[in-house]
Length: 112
Image (cartoon, rainbow, N blue to C red; front, side):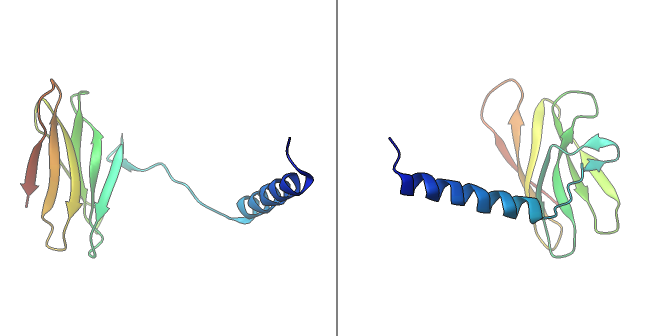
C-alpha cells in the first residue's frame, strides 16, 4: 500500500509535469525533401547543410539526401542498399553507412 506522503508526492509531480507540458509552446512540422517524407534527418553543419534519408525513388529502400543552406536538395542512391548518411562536416563531406537490403554486413561510405 502506498503511504499518504508518497501518494501526495506522486500527485504533486503529475500536476507540475502537466502544467509545464501545457505551458510549453512547441511547433512541429513534417519535413519533406522534394515531396518525399524525410525518414531520418541525421546531421547538419555550421553552414546550414543537412543530410538524411528519404524513401527510395524506385519505391524500395532509402536514398540519401543533402539539403544545402540555400534550399537546394540533391539525392543519391546505392542499388540494393539502404543509404544512411550519419555526418556532414563544414567542407560538405558526408560520411555514412550503406546497409544491404538482402542481409550481409553494412559498408561505410564517404561522399564529397
